[in-house]
Image (tube, rainbow, N blue to C red):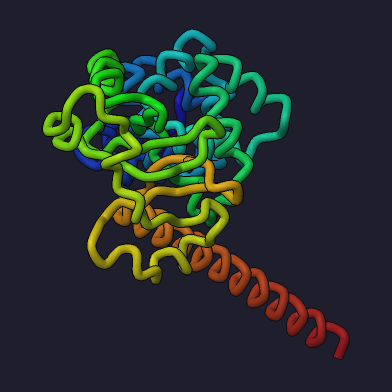
Length: 267
């Protein structure tokens, strides 16, 4: 039977989703799942994105496998990786097995980054092309692609290292036989995936843009990161630190009071 707090959280779900997410975070995962699975996978995914990684990861593990697989299609890889990062290897492997191979590979890569690292929060659904292609060949690949955003196209060499970028406009205004490497923009600012978010937010690369390429130590492209995304994550990390400090202060106060009472009894 659902607890009063759980019923109250479900009532808040539509009008106050943040309140619902906070309330549900304090409930047992098994109890939550029975109610969440009455929602569409899309609504459930939206709710999990508002929760902290630990409770949301526990819910993922407790969901029916078929429902969970459908839900994962509505989450960005970075959001999935954030939940899997706090799981033990075995349950993490079970959730990864529900992902298509391409998403699973990317997700495993992102799980390896620390929660406060830039690489943990990249948008991986970006369009890339091989530098050896001609413009005509590139246009064919773009037409058959299914990427959410293709305004900026990243050019990689045979070793998947980032060389530069081109725009859709660039592809349309040059002869089809022109190699991509001849007109790509090579002055492309990047951030290291291992950089901590607080340092990255102070980087001068944001002066003229709100999205930046993220690479690893071998300059292989990991994806794109958005300024608003990093600000949001940084705010969440600071809130977690404040909560942790508050809990520690309460524990110190409780132990102090207990010590005082014990001293009074002894004396």
